[in-house]
Length: 426
Length: 78
Image (cartoon, rainbow over all chains, first blue to last red; front, side, top):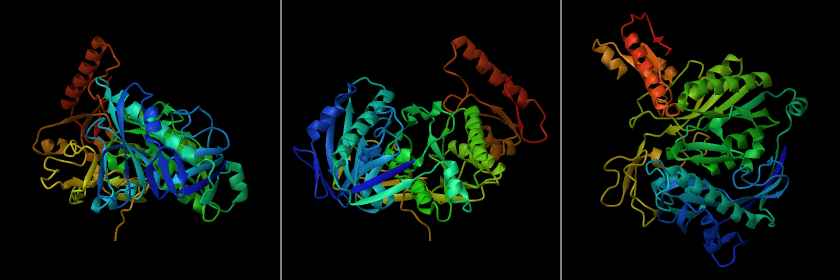
């Protein structure tokens, strides 16, 4: 499967009567976007705001971040099975408004949404301090359940991003990249001497608002399966997650998965990127056993020599991670796992809930329990009402001077397990 | 908690869903639970069936408590 991705650089977002992209500025018609959001009867009102890199702005509680993209040529459309018809995506041409993001805000669970700071210390911990964000704050109608609220925000966010993405359809991209994912046999014929490497992407699927959708399918109802990494670039995987902000994959993370990016950049040079496997993280032990069995079966059948496994979330998914790792290693295939740590505030506690001697190659995305004090910022988009309840927050988090002391767990994308973050070690 | 209570000389049964984690942390008597969000029940069952299931889990745990073990042991709920 071949996909050409054209990037149109966006350096600012402004509201205007006419929606368009001109000279690197994304002009948005918030009236038209509001009408799209209000198509859902669960949404009472919606408020738009723009947050730019460097501005003294704090956005919270953040639900999802979505990149505007448009299908220019080829089958299917962005977010297939969710807000567009089911059809296989991942080939042809796609345009991206790079530097722009839709950030959805709403107090769905209250304690499981995140913080994005556009300046100060907090900005260093989230990649979304570097994007121009159209922030959409949703108020639901009275009396709806958290599940209905989540579904309404998820869908409206995707539709708004889709609408913005269309503005880049007929533009000439500033940069174009080509991603060629050949069939298994083609790849082996082309690169007979390169090691066959696969990627197992674990998707959060615990239910109770911790869900991920693939072509519209709730991933907890699926067995481990395969697709082309280019399909993911076209929005085949969408986040429906309200879970700790630091290590959940937002839709933006899926659209820009750095593991896929790096595997492509090494493809045909040092390795043969041979397979993309997706699996789930369910709450029944039998599901964990079955899904990890299936990951190992696919790896064995495909005769891969090396596999990268990335986790999403923490806690019981550590067991899914270790099961995937152990069972794949037992097929004779080397693994490297990517995870993050909950090692306590001083970093001395056990990092993962589960472990195995076979997990001997690990990349960490950082310690989510690390404490940071975020300065008061001039403007808050959303509300600070949940600061002390947010995962990573605690009683006393919100100081009287407006500063916030939290574990970095509370910051959107801080310890992202795809490696889409800025933390490093000396 | 399991380990600290046992250290004080009182035997413990760890009823939990993800038994591999229980094995990793070193529990000696382990009883598998239903699911992470509802370890000791199953909301998809009717009230009578669920009561029976809950009774079975507790009975298995009590039996485990009274059983001598030589090492880490998982007691399946029958």
